[in-house]
Amino acid sequence: MNIKDLEYYQRLVYEKSFSKVADFYQVSQPTITYAIKRLETELNVTLLERDRSHKNISLTPAGRQFSQHVNKILRELRIAKREMSHFNTEQIPFGLPPIIGNYYFPKLSKQLLDQDILQHLKIIRDGSENLLRQIRLGQIDLGIIGSINPLTEDDLKSELLKEKKFQIIVAKNHPLASKTQVAFRDLLDENFVLLSERYVHLYAFQQLTATSGFEPHVVYQSDDLQILKSMIKDGVGIGFLAEIAIQPEDNLLAIDLIDDNQPLFYISMVQRSAEISTPLHKSFTELIRRVFMEDLDS
Image (cartoon, rainbow, N blue to C red; front, side, top):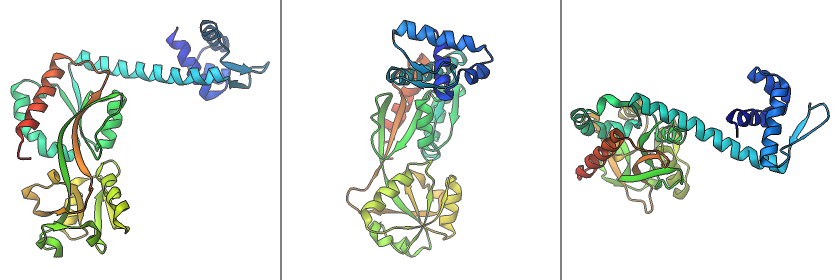
């Protein structure tokens, strides 16, 4: 089966026009026609219903089913090409969310340098949701991902490294600063500043909201953690962050939540299930495991 024939077919399903597909690929219309005939002959089914002029086409039930397979085949081929390029460059595209990276990467960096791994990393910093999507697409080989549920997708290989709490973050002069614990329902009158949907924090917050019986007043959302911390410090609102997000130099206070069944922040090492590790890749993942295991107090 010719890959180009599959590409023509996929485009034809989208365009519903032989002439438009021919124009897109800069080939003759008979080229597209013969490609579809080759597929139908090999599969021994009719994929398309055509009128006499070929101006209007529709998919048969077999054609719709085959289209789903073609999409998967071409998607896997694109991912394979990306992964092969990583082998050629001896580079590991590595996804690292800012909160996890700020806390754990300093613990990793010296050992990465000592083992001659650091120079081979291409670090992509983004929220966990975006990084996970890039791992699925083969754009990233490996990521340390935050989630509010264990990651159990069939096409992903996920290894849980740590479980952390979410906390309420306030300025040192905030009325809540004297508390060490608080119930989420007691924050009814507070303004919140939150991370955007690129981060799992928003989904954990929404989960708490769904069980709290009130709608919190969110005054601002940001992709930038440092901006968010500055706004909390300036009294614009209180925050909701994983416990590893706050460092002593931030001059902020973290308050534990006492709610039952509150969400947890799961930190996992994630890669595609089909990923075949190189010796460099194996050394890197083993180092990650060791650093997280040694970090017993975190």
